Length: 262
Image 1 (cartoon, rainbow, N blue to C red):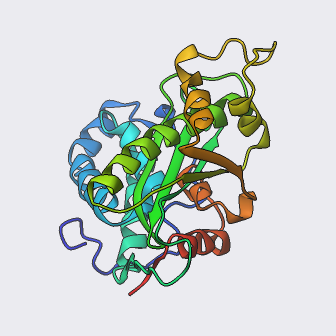
Image 2: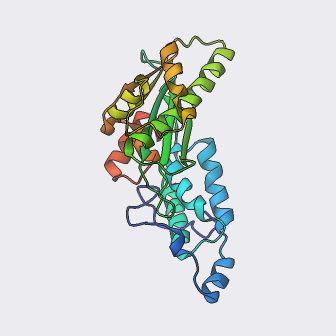
């Protein structure tokens, strides 16, 4: 906070507010704007908050994903968004991940996945977000743009589920290496159409264009090591990894993965 002159800033309740509609169109358009932004420590600030996100703060994953897209040519609006994240961090310095194995499901890896269809305003790519928990606390999380534009919400959710299943496979191996028994990894998804697609071996008109590499998820599910299960959007903590959500829902998402005040 001191390095970026934010030690006396007013805290905010969410990492990014709904009024931030960031795009490349907000990058500097004049020589004066370019000169002004050259004096702003944008890359340094984003790198600092990214370090916090990678280590212990899954709650800022979506916000960091958004502001990091404009590292090459940030504008004033992008810098305002970064400062908003810093204000959020200033008010949540006592927030961390709590691990608790007291309930029946805490001894297993559990995943949650979501996507935001065409959420990127520049190239209309969708955003993948997932979070995995163990002992009730978050252990792995990601918020990133998908590698290419997709044509439907179902495809966006399906591609996100594919990424989550790949992470689930890796986490299963890690847990086994640690000597812990992991019979089944459950990944919760709030898209019934995407779940149906993971079980349907037949192509049809609306999904035959999906890259065949994504369909390995069907083989994984058939093997029985990972299960994709429907969950209500309101109970899916990965929702906060893909979009800006209201404060009440955001705090509920944090509670679901035990990111709370210590």
